[in-house]
Length: 354
Image (cartoon, rainbow, N blue to C red; front, side, top):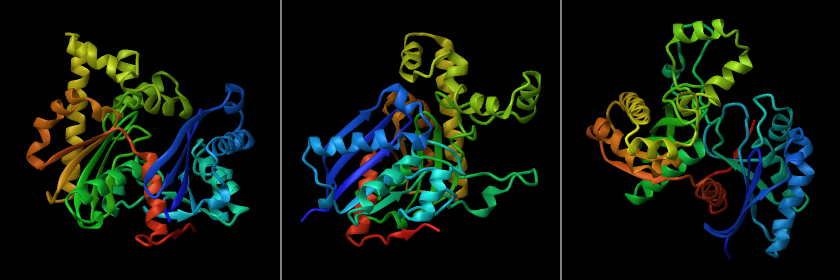
């Protein structure tokens, strides 16, 4: 009998739902609620979100009792190792309290538990954005009391690394790769034998710029900018994570539009893409140093990895480091199914969140 998996991935305006049998996606949908529903405080959105998921299941004749596991996107929790975790009371309390941050993804595990608990069905999360496997040396900064944090595209990065390992008949835990996720944010991770020992904070401006992120900035110049514009901490976060990068430089976060302008002769658009390519290449070089040059491959993923133009701009700077492979887009739903499947088939041990 196949392992029957329901996957939930909640975003700020949508609920992605998919039903898998083993690792084959059978049904999938992106469910959208009225603006007045998604504008409510997160916890007040639970009834409407829950109803939309049950409606999806009814539409395809899916019985909750027949499920083996419900796999949910991990929310903003305290830093944890990578892997698949069972949803427990402590996790639920922390997600509801939003002590590590408030985001719609926090609802994923809450809804998974709500659906499964009354029928004794295990709810899980896999590789949330707060996965923290950093080596101690990369946490340290030159100011006491400030440490680097690990916030990145853990789910997709680890899934792509596993895919690459499988393609060469090796285990993820036996390879060293640099994985670069290029989307709304850009994160470059040094994966050493199954652990991400170094990665830039893709949420708050560390590393390369992106369509919406500022990327790392010159300290003094940015401090002066903050003081001159009398920015609050909220406005600073907005500037570096929501209105930076392409939005600040070109007035739009539409990467395809800027790329088309660059290819049509817009020198400024081309300069932006060239700058982005160098920034990403430098980040790859930094990860190569952390891995001491022992690299099996460099893997590109995320929405911007569809751009052959961008990949070709980056390639000359880093191809001396090793093979380059491109996995465009993201595979979050499949990656969540894979995490649950590995646990149900005994390939991976279910971890306890504590």
